[in-house]
Image 1: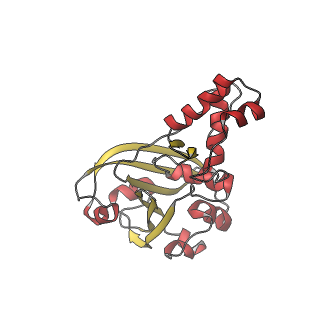
Image 2 (image 1 turned 45 degrees about the vertical axis):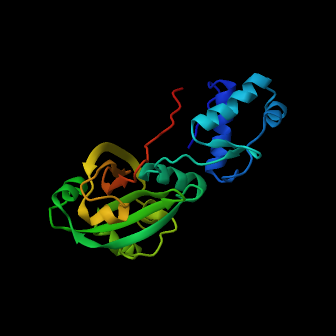
Image 3 (image 1 turned 90 degrees about the horizontal axis):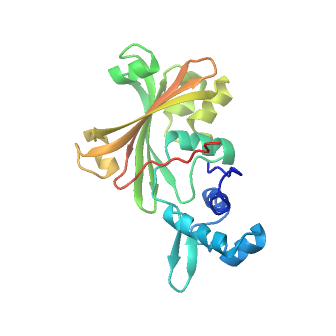
Length: 245
């Protein structure tokens, strides 16, 4: 979520508010963003301040100026990661940004590999839930995401091993069924070669180096609830906004 700290300069505070409206779908991609005149009237700022708002939005990929139409909203081609989706789910009721969609590639119980066993704190070969999803938008593949969860969660939530959509994503489903709420996470960003089993889904050659993010989640009891790894699509970037005060 985009912060709107009062410590921000006025033009950045207003830009952050507009970005939030775009991310929530209140301003749709292709719609006109508030004009300089609108901003002056609604925010009581100077012409110079209002003019800088659109410049910030264009620089950050949230707006573009089209000849004959004006400045309209767009979504930057950045990656929405697992942590982003958790925050979106909790604040908006949906884990997707406007224009995004998901394909559930597979959902099944599989033996834990050494990497997954270490992350979930189980023995190698232990049955674990594996869910693989492909996220897309109008520009193509955003990311190929694979999540692993302790196998016993499939007993409380059998939907986890079904390729049907999860209305509240894995986070919300687990919390509803077990009371275990994701309260802590660790993110690890790295460059890795794309494995053969996901290269076609990511629409790249196997072995291509890709940006990846691994996410570890723990519940309020300090127990691991999920481990995930996203392979980012070509020409995607990771971005995050933080309030420093």
